[in-house]
Amino acid sequence: MQEIIRLESISKTYRIAERKETMSAALQALFKRKYTYVEALKEVSISMYEGEIVGYIGPNGAGKSTTIKIMSGILVPDQGVCQVLGMTPWQDRVQYVQHIGVVFGQRSQLWWDVPVLDSFELLRHIYKIPSQEYRHTLTMLSEKLELTSLLQRPVRQLSLGQRMRCEIAASLLHHPKILFLDEPTIGLDAESKLAVRSFIKQINQETGVTVLLTTHDMSDIEALTSRIIMIGSGQKLYDGSLTQLRHQYDSLSQVTVKFAPTSSNSALERELFLSTFHQHDKFTCVSWTNTEAVFRFDPAAATLTELVTDLSVHVDVANIAVHTTPVEELILKLYKEYKV
Ligand SMILES: Nc1ncnc2c1ncn2[C@@H]1O[C@H](COP(=O)(O)OP(=O)(O)OP(=O)(O)O)[C@@H](O)[C@H]1O
Image 1 (cartoon, rainbow, N blue to C red):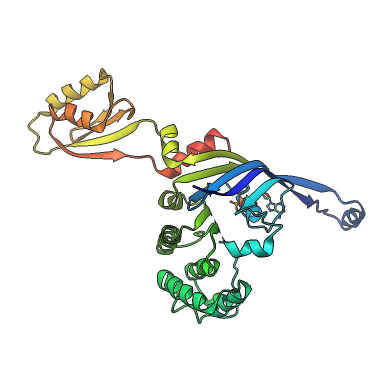
Image 2 (image 1 turned 45 degrees about the vertical axis):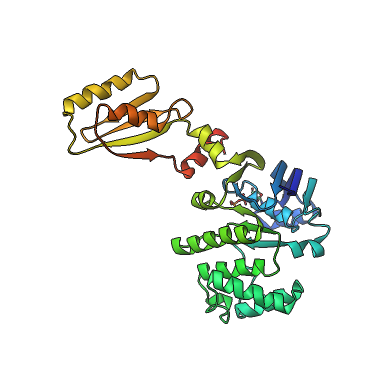
């Protein structure tokens, strides 16, 4: 896979002028300003490859939006190298923006008082999209994002979910190679979230567009990304797959085994048998009742099939449920480990 985004040791510090309480102190400050400094990014390095969907996560104030602003050329870092598609975003801006699409969930790129279609037309002119290509793309996006009934309405009349679908369409009109999505599902109801998610997945699969997605919603991450990059207090803390994360923080598999109601074993027999699991070298029986038992084992040392084979000699099994730790919990463990 080809590397299309490369950040090397990117740092960014914001300078904030101190505000004074009293009028005289404020007047004095006009001549002798005092500043505080916020280190938003500290030597962050990131590589992304063509066609990937990467989840960029971290708690509030971690530095996610600052990174996206640097990658999209809106902000200039204090230090480091940023190469996207072989360009430096803030230097080759006019050429560069032809290749990227950006959506900020908290801000609109559409004109508030005019119909959505007028904003799209304006973007067509800005990006110099040939009319036939524009019509074709608009039809495709309108169908996939169900925009037909929205296009003639002013943006201010749209619901958040409707507006977000239009924002995403606007960011794709010029067929960008990379899509930066900064919290695209923020504030959306369950149905709108699903619509946005399934569209992102579909467009990535069909066009190969590379996607960097920031979100606080871990179900977005689970549904869309196989790789996550975590940032905390301006530093990159984790870069890897969800599977790796699961191995790291969820090393033991847990299964609940339900006994058949018409089981031929007596409760006593079952109890005696389950108590032998205390000495079992591969499986631990965590708890049991008359109707079910919970087991834990290390998937590197044993398999579910072995457990079922062992069990079925002595008890009638009706059902087995494998417990997987929700991604939300895994990420919380990661945040805790790094104290962010
Ligand atoms: N324009 C600015 N001026 C001063 N400080 C800023 C500015 N923008 C961001 N910051 C500070 O930089 C740090 C990183 O902010 P950033 O918006 O990149 O974080 P984030 O991870 O996107 O957070 P969130 O999840 O809350 O959107 C924060 O401490 C924030 O207060």
